[in-house]
View 1: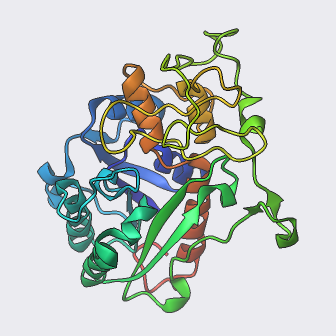
View 2: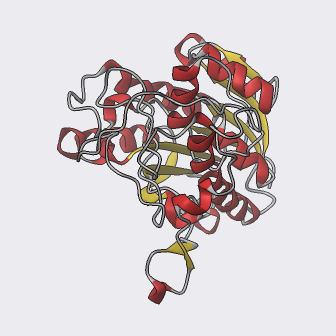
Amino acid sequence: MDTVSLFSGAGGLDLGLAATGHELIWANDFDKDSVSTYRKNIGDHVIHAPIEAISSNDIPEAELIVGGFPCQGFSQANLRRTIEDPRNRLYKEFVRVITDKQPLYFLAENVRGISSLGGGSALALIVAGFEAAGYRVAAKVLNAADFGVPQNRYRMIFLGTRIDLPNVADLRHPLPTHSSRPEDGLQPHRTLGECLAAVPDPIKFPLAVPNQQYSRYRVVERDFTGHRATNPDRPSPTILARGNGGGGVNATPHPDGTRRMSVRESAAVQTFPLDFEFEGKLGSAYRQVGNAVAVKFAEALGSAASVAHRQIPSESGRAA
């Protein structure tokens, strides 16, 4: 499907969608480095501007609109999270665009903490907004590890199908392909050690691949965000953009316990290709990686969108 991407960041979601055959025709983000990264690796169709400054008339028609509206105000890592946080209101811009453009489908991503914010009132408010725009909505928390990502990364995935489409063509959440339980009959979860084995060591081979730089912030193992020990025999903990709603970037400890993972290693855990290059300084690159949708997870979402689209009778949609 022709696809528009809002709040695109460095392009993890878009990269996965493109891998499953969708055509990215327009994207935007307010962060200069993210836009530079996107343009260098994905394409020139990205606009450097906040979505609230862009008229719907300047956004092309699309069959699918996607986006991870900013999540910092919704994150469980933000101890000061509140429904009044101004960053939490940007979902209204997503609602505004799908209301005006009326794509066949939409796909929105956010942190799972959104489900408990305001005692569930934030989630209800967002779903009601999507429904008022003219869509049947399904919202569910999925773990990226269940789709081949070597990381436990739980995200709320909103899926919308335009109400004039038949129910058979509903966009549905993909089924897991991986599990930690052998009795499920699925592939085993990918581990952090398996992932890092495919990445050149940043100390021995600092120039082998892009973004080999790593944070020199010392590793102190304690039960707190960004300081928990990592186990090479299990999926990584969530790769974060920023810890506790403030301060600097939050680089995940390497499982050897002696240093933090490099930008490249963190990006590999997010299933970005080794040659995908992040623009900007160290802190910016870490943030772009942590804010992204894991590429392999995005591929599962893209495949689900393709399955739904193929079910549209030719007379029902713009491009069935």
